Length: 261
Image 1 (cartoon, rainbow, N blue to C red):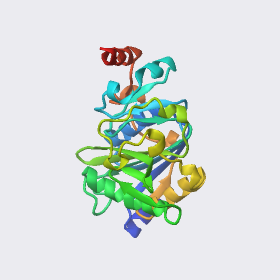
Image 2: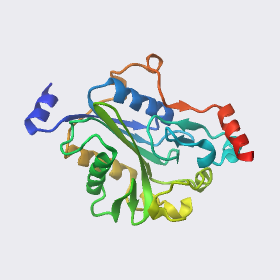
Image 3: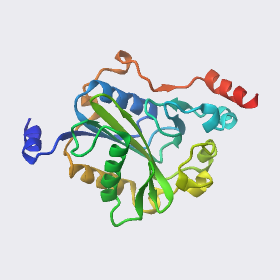
Image 4: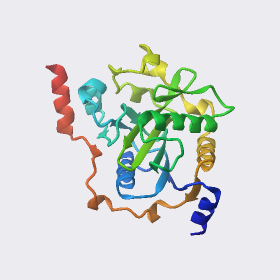
């Protein structure tokens, strides 16, 4: 109650911060979906890395157009279809995830529309990377110069929205080979390959420094209260039907057959 009182006195909305380390991305996405749809609080989740390499697709992405299906099957790479829009990414222990889930009136001058939320996030991360690199929001990506290091996706409900980002602190070159060049690529990408298009955050700052700077920037707009993942009070996995799901081998094999025909 004291924290909420201080938040009201300062005129800042309360945001609950949960710091995670290595939570499997499927588990993280299930948690995010439950927080968006069943909680009335503002949340920030920071997950420092995930488990084994995993491909994560947007809600409406077409597997055969976005993923090199044969090597994915050969290497047993799991594929997840998440509940938000956006593009396709490969994530692993070198990906840092930052998620913000907010009530529509939590941030002044931010409307519950993709462009408004995206613009606000760009200003927030401009504070995070101030003095470190040539940071820009380019279309829907975070870039240093003209090279992408952060991919974003969103979902907006009647009263709430989520904006989550996967940051490439580092990446494995082989993982990038699982992705096709998307037909609807950002204009600034031109025809660059994945390796020519992305860059590594580790060339600019450490993992811990990035996380500390992010929390500090969020603290400029919210009264931040750190809590443990065990104290999150939302329905359990078994009590909630998630949109985010792991694709079956049959679905992946069918996509492979579609390409061949």
